[in-house]
Amino acid sequence: MVADTKLYDVLSISPTASQDEIKKAYRKAALKHHPDKNKDNPSAGEKFKECSQAYEILSDPEKRKLYDQVGLEDFLNGGRGAPPGAGGPGGMPGGFAGGMPGGFGEMPGGMGGGGTRSFHFSTGGPGGGGGGFSFSNPESIFADFFKQGGAGMGDDDDIFAQFTGGNASGGGGERSRYRDSGVGRRRARTPEVTTVEKPLPLTLEELFKGTKKKMKIKRKTYDDGSGKRKVEDKILDMEILPGYKAGTKIKFKGVGDQEEGGTQDLHFVIQEKPHEVYKREDANLRMYVELDLKEALTGWTRTIPTIDGKKFTLSKGGPTGPGYTETYPHQGMPLSKKPTERGDMIVEVKVKFPTSLTLAQKTRLKEVL
Image (cartoon, rainbow, N blue to C red; front, side):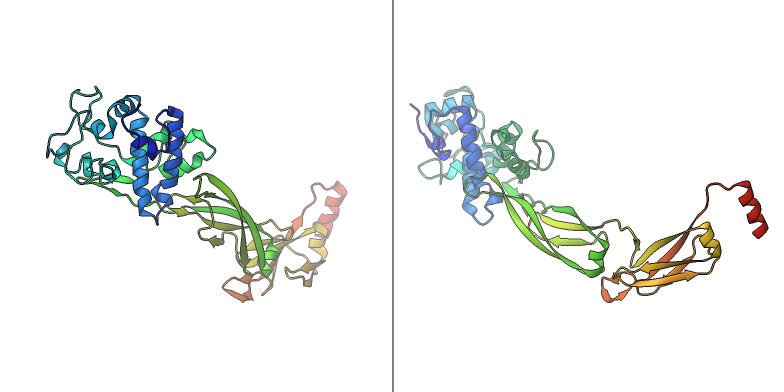
């Protein structure tokens, strides 16, 4: 038989609940009422605080034992009444060290709301040595729960990582979103929403003409009822304008995973697929014509294709040296900011020299040249 059930009621559990059941109940309540998931519901912050304070007591076997014996009010007094008019530790009225308002100090039902009083706690039970007791920062309780393995109780561990800014071992990031001050605690600045970049490979023809694409993505969100992580599909429509270059970003705001501070932005970064004919140089296109030594010396003819399907005939009587170029104005890529204008197409000659010559060939060449 316990003296009262207020803390158990906050977590919606029985006074006979095991430590594992207490952890599961706190995990569910903390996720449901966390302020970062309830930015438009101010009362959620108080509920998050209450369930965290309840967990702080019930998760400690010694504190829980004393609470079960004497009830919450006497527990906060260390099992004895507080001296009339006494101030809290550090001279702060209202009961909690650090002046934290709300929580169980203001719950209805006679749990210390309204008057100035001091809560003292002694682990030695009723009559033990007096020591000031104050509830911990609720965000610190939440972060410590995560650090001690609380996130390992379900399939949505990454929810804790996003709330606490840590990883599975609890390290790294900003552990608490509250900051101590002389008279209370106030919220620290909300972290900025992260941006995720994904590659978007496109052909040179797609970048020349422009195109429209539909991209199916999977995004992680929270189920408001259970607080668990869920995955949903989303279709993104994107328009690729003529002349876009590698490195151009197609940006979508607030369509990625839900995380602390909001929903991720997605940026798709254009990558140019290698082309079998052309090499892009800003708005220009370069292609190569390979000649054997005979052609380079005596003359050659080639049909030159353009990116938009046209064909030109290029002829030279020779000799043509390696690195020779022929430029075709306005046959390159469109300018993204001026799509009616285009760069040039540049044709460059490469000469393939023989790897060996016979003595007779060498003699003949000497005679001719």
